[in-house]
Amino acid sequence: MIERFLKQTTFVSQEDYEKNLEFIIPEHFNFAYDVMDEWAKEKPEKLALLWTNDEGECIRFSFKDIKEQSDRAAAYFMSLGIGRGDMVMLILKRRYEFWLSMLALHKIGAVAIPATHMLTTHDIVYRNNRASVKAIICAGEEYIMEQVAGSKAESPTLEILVSIGPKQAEGFHDWHKEWNEAPAFVRPSDKNDNDDTMLMYFTSGTSGEPKMVAHDFLYSIGHLTTGVYWHNLSEDSIHLTVADTGWGKAVWGKMYGQWFAGAAVFVFDHEKFTADKILRQIEKYRITSFCAPPTVYRFLIHEDFSNYDLSSLRYCCTAGEALNPAVFDKFKELTGISLMEGFGQTETTMTLGTMPWTKPKPGSMGLPNPQYDIDLIKPDGTPCEDGEKGEIVVRTEKGKPVGLFKEYYRDEELSKSVWHDDVYHTGDVAWRDEDGYYWFEGRIDDVIKSSGYRIGPFEVESALMTHPAVVECAITGVPDDIRGMVVKATVVLHKDWKAKAGDDLIKELQNHVKHVTAPYKYPRIIEFVDELPKTISGKIRRVEIREKDNKK
Image 1 (cartoon, rainbow, N blue to C red):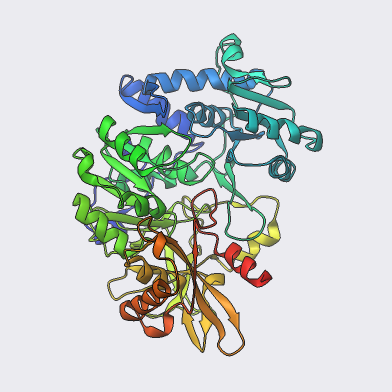
Image 2 (image 1 turned 90 degrees about the vertical axis):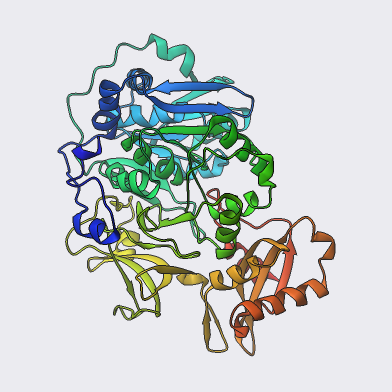
């Protein structure tokens, strides 16, 4: 399959990868037809999707099943009046209908807008009106349906509501009752163009109102490198990525790149995350490849791995935020597996990463993915030397890279503020070592300036994470009359240390940081909390901590 889209398909070194990675771009590319339907022709009985939930249900979909059922879903959507260019919001949690809906919308040429099930009526109204949403396909659960139904009166463009069950309500179409009555699917005669909008995300964001990130039909090809190379997948892989379908990480790890590789996508549809549940799924279904944000690994390493048979697991990756070296080291000790880190944004596919042919450096984001022209620049726009902190940018003088977003939909000013003069500004700060590896420092707004020093939150968080008392932490700056700002640590303690929370432990943690890293970085303020504020995608919302402190 991948040889249709790459001029060279195997690489033996980073040098080989940088020199020879080149995409073959078909006209009118459509992932649903050109990848999934082709797999259905070539290997119809091959396992494509293995879905299970925390009630013990299990459904296996072959590539043939996926084609037939996505065709049926496309025909059903068309019978409801959904057509090319229509905006369709998907609030489907981890239900298998999400994958069928995504492919069906691609086949129609409609725009898929995945969204989290935690949205309120207010959130849905905002999204409906900003994007002119025409239809919402949602899980049939009381809370979700109430919020969706409540949005309709204030959403002039919203015409169609569909529930996939188990519950139904007045005003909603019943997916599983009606889709069997739809006529046979006929592929629309008007093919999509490569630069048509295929997918749109409202970014979860660590600050500000959600932005509408629009992706074209080539975005999925951009994830070929994500699944085939970074995740190191093949046709015999069973891959699990921990991600809600409302988050961009779902298509990073549970759809495009994995199916380019011909791997089986494993989905665990669960209500509440526990490390034990995830490890039991890996054991029971013989998962071979695993990807999760660092938050998940921080909880996994506190389990007793001797209670699980994880012998099927061969490869593990992480992305979403920076990985603390202490977590890398502990996971390697427990499993013998090195975590391969990757970096990207909702606006991109993977821009930096540790590939199978490179040696991981614990805590590093890895090396630039050559499908992007990555650079590191100072505030004045000049390139950084090795060791200097700067903003990660993508240079676009040679054209838009495959995988980079089209625009912030309906916000030309915002688009130009981050993408101008042939440079896309990520807003993320890092430094590069002498081997070309990048090391994350934080968002531009997160960098703390204290007594003339510039302190990146991640370096202090990484130091704290090496103390056994700390499960999670967030570093922020607090205004100070003398120093300008001082470092504050908001800390979640391990259950065995919670009883020790107090001045003595604060002093111990402060001294620990002074010992592990430069003394000027130590947190002068430490607050113990039960949990950290996070986005739906699991990223720590430091801005929320800062806002709370500023109100005191």
